[in-house]
Amino acid sequence: MNTLETTKIAWPPEITVKKHPRARHVKLKASSQHGLELIVPKKFNVKEIPFILEQNRSWIEKQLLHLQNARNAKSENLPDEILFKSISQTWQIDYIYNPCKLRIIPRPHQELVLFGNIDNKAECKKLLITWIKKQAHLHLLTQLQLISQEIQLPYNDAIIRDQRSRWGSCSSEKLISLNYKLLFLPFDLMRNIIIHELCHTIHLNHSEKFWQLVEKFDPNWKTHRRDLRKADPFIPGWLT
Figure 1 (cartoon, rainbow, N blue to C red):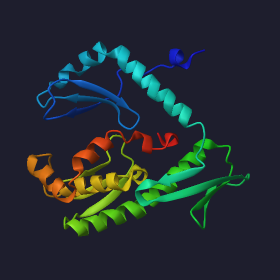
Figure 2: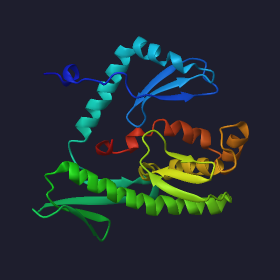
Figure 3: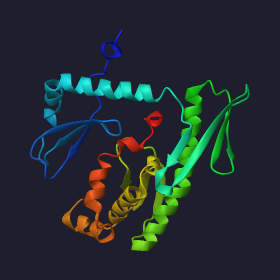
């Protein structure tokens, strides 16, 4: 039986509303990285959301089913390698069955061994994600510190998070959060995100002055911003 016909989508669906100063019309988007998004003008009335969802229900359900099936198909197999494009590292992965507790054993030359009950794919995935987050804490926070010193925009603290719809954020206390999946992006895009968040330590908005500051440190920010909208393929399917 066709999976598309039997799989149910929860209704109303989870949705992220983004107000864009240059938006003139309401726009729906669906992606594996950000889920369902509603791009709206600045003065949009949120009370209209239920009507918009119902009006576009057929399209929304079709898109969400497509994304769900794609995620399921990609997550069936565990990876043979992990590619961190932002730091130019490729880790080869071996799986060795043993009835003992599952664990990761790092080897020289960027090799990992998952040793234990490798038939439990959910536990293998969980263990790999934990390891990736540790790598993100090591490498992304190092990059943040280096870029902060380079462009002379200090911050107070930083954390690594698993953010579903953001690559990063900066609070009014100058606490910077970075998505651990930045490790999978090309270096230029990862650097763009870090510069973006560091500029928020001066302008906690997206004003003209903010973008001028971003451009000072990243002259190609507009190209990078466009590329980030198409960054889904860089993220391994088994992670989504």
